[in-house]
Amino acid sequence: MRVVAWIALSLFILYVQFGIHEFGHFHMARVNDVPVKEFSLGIGPSIYQKQAGDTLFSIRIVPLGAYNDFSKEGVEAIAKLPLEVRLLISVMGIVNNLLSSLALIFLIQFAGVLTGRLRFLDFLFEMAVTPFRLFLMIARLFIEILSFGRKTIGVGVYRLPFEWNKNSIFMRGASFFILMGFLLGFSNIIPLMPLDGGRIVLEFLSLTAISDQVLVIIAFSGILACVFIFLTSFSYRVSINFAMFDNQPLPGVKKQEDEKSSEAVSSP
Image (cartoon, rainbow, N blue to C red; front, side):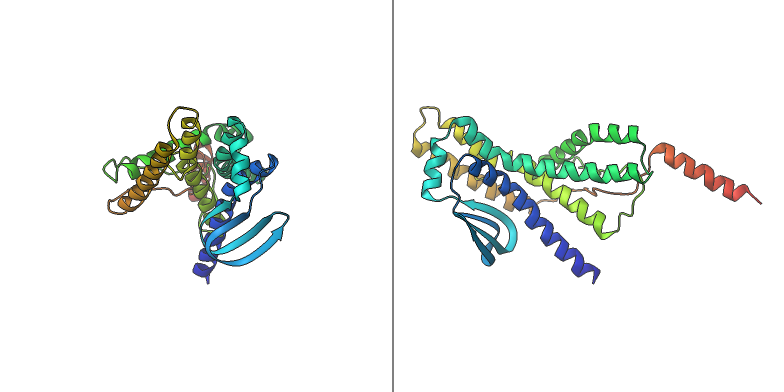
């Protein structure tokens, strides 16, 4: 039963994180009066659809992605927008994923403050350094993947600075949610099509004298490169150690616990 619950939770988290990413594009497009034909969570056959205004909202059976389907009018409307607005539409998916992961880390660590597991000053310190720690971990992960496992440098482990039941379904789900948010966010920075980073590069290249035919070739080459990296990564051993949450109390807490244990042993 526990395995079934974890699989169901994992699928739900995939839908949510892909949806958070695509909603960033969708919201910024609608704010700028760009019509969106369909906003879809998942791919494949649809299991639920609802028309709301000009947009068809869909949930599809395979939770490995999400997308905004722009009509011809939508594509033309985007092309007429200023460069900075087009860049915002492209980048907001990345921003949404990263902010959602950081927000959940903030809430869990603040819960540690409220329950007395974490001092407030330690909470402020953790929130200041956590983004940098996670960025380095994801950067190491991409180095290993892009080198096809030849650069095994170890991704590292992020642990909460206080005791928590790491085996609870909530903590495992939170770990997966945060991991997926950072992976989706940082992977889309890679300047290859069809990733958001590739779209941003094409936006800047469109300002140059490069012909549309060359831009199409660059975009298609980026897609092939992404497929190649994805497929060949499975052919090599990529060492990934990313247990987002684990039990590791602060040094002061650990010392107090050791002292209490010693007193309990020494007392008659």
